[in-house]
Amino acid sequence: MDVEQPHSIWLCPTATANQHLQNTIDNIADQEGTPSFAPHVTLLGDIVAAPRHTESLCRLAFAQNAVVDARIEGLAMTNLFFMSLFADLDVPSYLHDVRRTLADRLGLDVAPDFRPHLSLAYGLARDAQARQFTRTTPAVSQGQNLLLDTVVIASSSSTLAINLWKPLLKIKLVSA
Image (cartoon, rainbow, N blue to C red; front, side):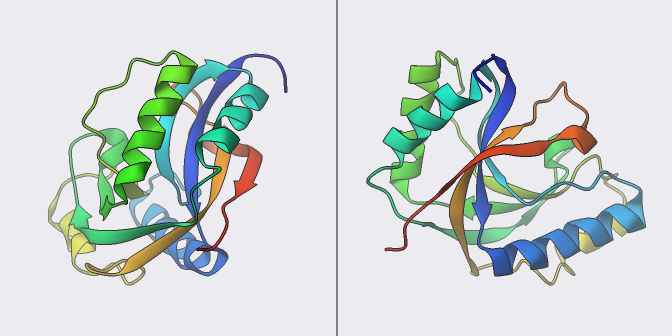
């Protein structure tokens, strides 16, 4: 794992929330014929570096931070493949700082306008049936808190088939 390879930094929900979200993602994927994937919030994607190097930077960046307590602001849809149906998240301000620090240390040029979100579907058509999901997704509701307790270095990128995405390394965050 010391070889450079494409990967991403994800924040993943607690086991209980993860199971509910995975069921929701799988149900939508089954109904709509879209890909299934693990519930996650992408902090940084399309990184080309050694995953162990990224892990060590994440350990430093998250050393003083506890479990991320995100608040669901609501569900939204866009025409972007990876943001076709998602929960918009309000996250602590330090997470924006951690993201900038990691991007700088990894030599990534990232847009400053980070929109934290947890996708529920990729590639979903924006028709009337698809819009129903913004009203009927039981695992996600406005005002609900979502605890993200694991940093995952995942073999995922926009150029890698979704069915090949998998966790490489995990870092458990501490409870506050």
